Length: 454
Image 1 (cartoon, rainbow, N blue to C red):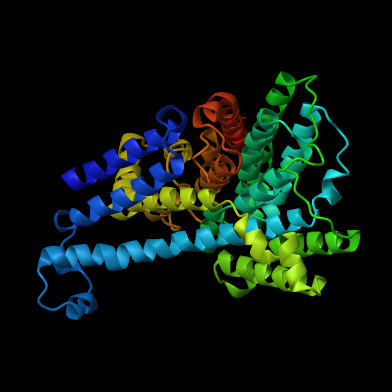
Image 2 (image 1 turned 180 degrees about the horizontal axis):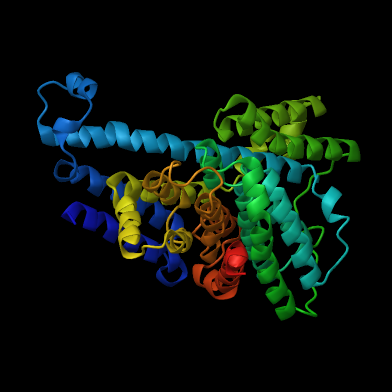
């Protein structure tokens, strides 16, 4: 392996260690993630002359930089093309996240979530886990796992006062959101990739992966509800800072709730109809909700002073979570651009001859690095001629990549969002939730292959 690739891998591992040891080192994981992302790209750029053959670069690029030495050409290619191309993908995720968080915060500000929370009377932890887990599972299939996680954690804050209880529920939300997204063509970015690429069909993924995905969340729920039997959850105090809701009429509360929820549900519809990236639909929905909020308040200055105006809401958005996303996605994109992820996929293919074993391991590997480039690598390794649409390879890949990331808090967009919103410790999640997620992943895999065993 060239020195530059080795250094990129080393920096990623060291940065990863600093992220998971945040409480031990005293260095915030956001700073560690940002430094890791920037350093990975910097090292890759500096090592580009040894990794890229400048003569093989596109002719139009070479013509645009006449007389430049080959070393400079390689570095310009990485900086102006590879980085910016991948940063566009990262930015689309960040704008999607910002739009979703703003809509959810708007609904929260108007007290809209009380429409749901007022109907949940149970105070027992097991029943709350089942209610929130199953709602998350089905909602994730209609929205997507990231948006659903943001919505459900916001709901959990309205139901549960103690942080220890809330992070336990947040862990189940992560597993349920990823499991729910795995059986829907729009529930997870990887299933959407496979759907658009023709590897899976809508009816095929729902028919083949619904039951394994359901088992993937039912098993952790059953285990955790048995562990928490008899545990009573305290409701937030009305004056609790986390339970922030400004004075508003029931009419305004209902309007904003339904505007926000329909806006979120509109995003996958917008994508299907226009074929534009999901963040465009999210920003459109945010614009509509923003306009509705302006119409509801005749006095704009009073709305700003009361904290209910969108300009005030934007200041309450969890910016550190967004920056953490940015750092993590930058680091993973450097691994993808440098070819390290492709090398890892090829190595798995060389060591393990059974393709389903490779997919199983890729699911577990997605708990460490982003599942998107891993799925892209598998899509490049096998073609539709050998494995046609809805072949078990593709449907199981959708399940594995979608649910395997739940084994670590940093292994999925849903997990990263939950980690940022609730300040979940990496080792706590691995100890209390990771093993449950692994049990669900293995149980779901068993259901996938059960017909072949009978």
